[in-house]
Length: 309
Image: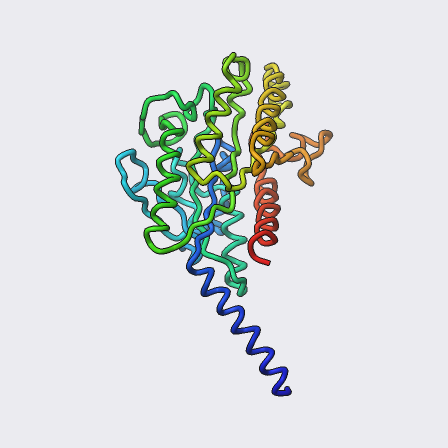
């Protein structure tokens, strides 16, 4: 090999090293919030695929030390598939967070110059913005547990945690930048008493404005389209509220330039002629693992192009 080629190779290695050194001083932060699909309810992982050894370059908030309104700081640790959702207790599922964390760590292990990733995940099944635990009007309650016993005032809790998470990283001399907030929820608001309230849109405006402010008003937000009409049909429930909620989510995208409406029915697995539309489990409500993986892959590809060319 010529001296010219050797020098060029050394320059490439040095450039990659410098890029990695700079990225170590930054922290990519991912927020995931919502209802049951935000933590892949019922989609239990095979034991061999669980992440039990904490990842080295992906971190998340531990449920036990953080799940309190009294905390003034947060506790991070390497990502695992257990004990991380700050909402209900449900672990080891094929969630969006799992697939994205795995993609990120695998890329770092292959030599990609990525910042360390920090994930904040807060979700409880069957809890909407209007009548559920995400309702901004609820008083502060913190009762941890599994679905059915858990009772947490998610709105004030999320605002507190979001700000503490970013503040903690900054205090450590790490520059946090939010790569996205994913709202995978709102199904509960499609029922009567939610979408048909006179102040429905006003409540949505206040919720999304406040949450966005807690994470930095310029961060990208991803809102996921509701497509569980077959669930309503089989349960003999009106699906009218689904369109109303989807319209409200798209309205938020018009109010904020940094919001994106993810059309779940454009997923490659979507097929109205297939059982459960090709994307849901047998209950016609909860996304299959491959759908959660598609969510993660499309977002990962977007982030790589946006921040890590």
